[in-house]
Length: 81
Length: 278
Image (cartoon, rainbow over all chains, first blue to last red; front, side, top):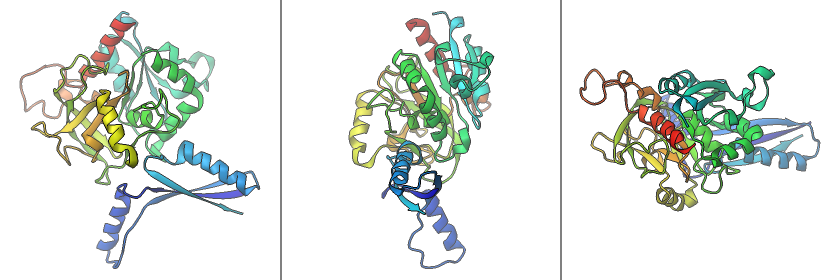
C-alpha cells in the first residue's frame, strides 16, 4: 500500500473567496501580520501498488479526470511510503 | 412529432432537488415526462426500472446539490455520466435532441465537456468551469437576464433577442471562467458562434456588476449553448419563474401574461423545436 497526497489549489490569478474570507475572519479575531491565506484541497489516496512511479502516474490521471479542473486548478502529488 | 408523443427524461442523482417541478412543467405543457435516476440509465437497477437515453427526446439535468457538490459542483455527476454513458450521450447530442441543464445541471454539462463544447461534442477535459462566486457565498436573488442569442439556441428560438427576463439565481458556484491564457480567444469564439444565450443585466438593461451579476461571471454570462444550439446550460432557474405567481414581484406588477412567468418560454421553445424537427 502506498499513500498519495494530492493537493489541488487554484491557479495564480483565480479569485479565492474562501482564502480571502478566512483571512478576513482571522484578522477580525485579532491575528496580526497575515500576508495571505490560500485555500487548497487535500486528497489522501491509498493505492494497492508498491511502485511509487505507478502511484504517481495513477494520481496524475485522477487529477486529470476528476480532482482538478485544468481551467482553474493546479495540483501537486507526493507519494508517501 | 406530436407534443403528446414527446418524451422528456429529467435525470437525477442523490442531492438533486429540482426534478419534480421540472417534470411537472413539461407535463403541464403536454409532453410526457418522468424523472429518471442515473442508475436506471446505467443499468444498476432491476430490469423493470431500466431506461435508455433512446427512450427520451429531451434530456434535462435539473438543479440541486448533486453528490453534495463534492470535489466541485457537478463533478461527481459528470464523472458518472462519462464513465458509462459517453457514447450514448454523444450520439444523443449529435442527433440534435435537446439537452437542458439548469444551475447544477449547467455545472454538470460543463464538467462533462458538453458545454461549451468548442473542441468536440464532448471534450475529454472541461473547457470551462463554473467557479465559486466572488462574494464567497451562496447568492439567492431574482436576476435579470438579457437574451443575446440570435436564434441558434433551441430553448430560446421563440423569444425576441434583446428581451429581458427574470429567472431566480440560487447558486454558490456560478462564475463562468475560461482558461486565463485563452480567455479572449474562446470568448470571441463563443460570441461569434452565437453560443452566448443570456447575460446578466441591471434594471436598466446594462451589463452591471454585483449584485446584478451575482458571481462575477465572465462577460456577465448567465447561459450558453453549444454550436448547434441543442445543448443549453443556464445558471439561474427558469422553472422557478414558470408561472406568473412564482415571480417575486407578481403582486406588485400588473400587465403581461397573467398565467405564465418568463421561464415558461424556454420549456415551450424546446418542445416546439421537437415538434418541428422530429
